[in-house]
Image 1: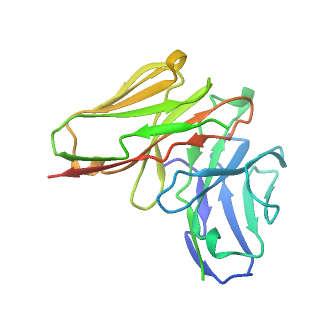
Image 2: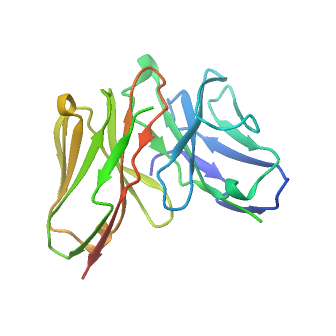
Amino acid sequence: ETGVTQSPTHLIKTRGQQVTLRCSSQSGHNTVSWYQQALGQGPQFIFQYYREEENGRGNFPPRFSGLQFPNYSSELNVNALELDDSALYLCASSGGRGGGTGELFFGEGSRLTVL
Amino acid sequence: GIQVEQSPPDLILQEGANSTLRCNFSDSVNNLQWFHQNPWGQLINLFYIPSGTKQNGRLSATTVATERYSLLYISSSQTTDSGVYFCAVKRGSTLGRLYFGRGTQLTVWP
């Protein structure tokens, strides 16, 4: 039990639709990062949010966007869904006072299927 | 970015056997974590080990940062150890950015 919760756990969308995934960070953590894990691969960094601003981004197009709220929870939004967006989306929290130890803790993930 | 290579990609063991998983990385890092991914997809933290050696029950890990590798040891394997083991590293100040390897798929037979 990491204290990081994600919703929904599973969802099915069709090509061209939009999706919003949600994440609540572990108590005391102020940084949230999102990862995409395709089948058989390691997770790939999408972006990170700190103090409600994006401050690091991986190699993902602008149709992947996010938000962080004052309580440090976060949303991942994906527009114009493509078949290749089918994946497990993982949220991680880290940080805290003084930056914390740097250790990341992951939620259970949201499994997205795009038809 | 940092390249992370894990070996072996697949490992099949009988219950009770010992194993060593390896993680090589291409640059200096300030964070290294080992995870076990359960069948439902959740990444379970095993070790946060930027350097040195740590032990937790039947598992232990060693990171030699100067030589850019880490090892995860599993002793007396159990069927519940099955799953994918990931090594992930971080460099620099982007707190939440980890670079993952492709994992080692471990199968333990009774």
